[in-house]
Image (cartoon, rainbow, N blue to C red; front, top):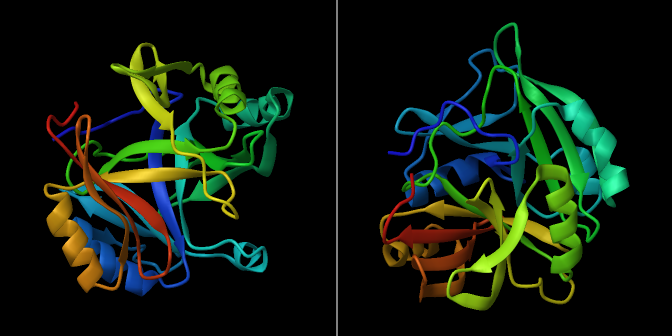
Length: 264
């Protein structure tokens, strides 16, 4: 089980779901990904932690009014670890992006903040978050069934996005081995950390996508359909394994992947 006690700056390290139906989402993902949950016992923090093998794996929360007012649909958010949230925010505009929400401490039960967060958009319009850990590192388990496995940005301009993320996070852009016409693969110190995806269809803005590991993509797709989800891209074989794209009952899209060899 690939456990994490820290994440190198520049690494996607957390995902959470903004939804219009938290309780429905909790039931759905418990059935599909085998999640258990932890809630703030005081009831003061409206954020539910998904747990895999006793480790934090993802978050679920009610969409705030500002997201609803802007017409944002239920969606998964990607967080990338940074050493200093304020220093990161100061560099976004110069790289061609925009800070959507300035640095803010995120509370957790107890005396310390969980971390310091920034919400930003790249020059092509894809929104993402960064996380400067204080009491919480992000995911404590990755690259395993039930856990966050991969993140990719769907954009119409790979070159502009690659230059932006390279400048801010030190990512190098390359291609998948043996697939020169495939997606751009971002590496950090030689290790793959994220990639680009297919350009979004007409009417869908650039965005970040998330993948979760499962032991059997086909079986999980059948379970998801029975639980009110929809399979958008049926299971197919792909390089390192087998994957599919789904939407949950509230409309948030995500990918499933079964890998032949799970990475460390």
